[in-house]
Image (cartoon, rainbow, N blue to C red; front, top):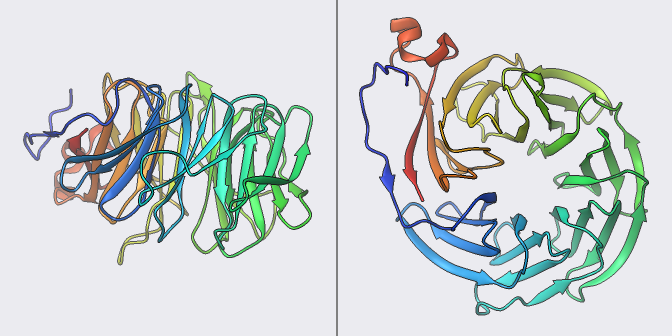
Length: 338
């Protein structure tokens, strides 16, 4: 491993949230996360206290995505069992709503800004819009080869962004349920996407191997298809890409995680890699959930969930000694595992 100028720190080990690989993690509140994975459970966890919360059992195949509606007690989970389930922390441990209609694994899940509609996308090429209260599918649209990998609702807008195994990024108008823009296809499958809080930028990530592909790409949504920068450095599929909350005095930052078992933090605008954390042996890292700075949650296939802290290095004067690989000026470390 790397010799670190900061010395050795102990990683807290809490009760594991799951048995098996974790596919998805998101924040319900500044203290609580929700996650899902191969054990088919949807789990609430108070990671600041290191305490497991409710566990929701209802899917009969692995959970692929979980999302929460900000400021509410709602949780939505998508699964390889072709369904989406809705849960409410205040209404016991049974699902309060079931969204059925897809024919293959559901990988995309997003809630409208007003909390009334749910958008879902599947490997079955269908994009669906549901009324949450009635669980009725109100709109559906099938595009050949559009094997949906991820969906984001653009904040304060009627637009939805969607990535696909056909290497394309599509922007949908939720009012007409038509594609309003298609970005030029990349060379590799697009695995994930995230939209900046101001709705101006999109980041998407690519699969790949041996350093071919594996990048994340920043796009300007105000000029559809306009590529701003690319973030290159992962050696295998980049599975997740997220905008980090803005910290005073720091540049805007993007975080990525990869099948190469590393997390990287990038300067959003210059694409400089500001720091890398390698979680050797953790397997693919396929989901990130930025929390209050400096905290970032990371899901892994082999070693559960990680609470990571990202902070300015106090050792910049020591050059590469304080930054593995000689890259960047951030200290990124695992504080707890659960």
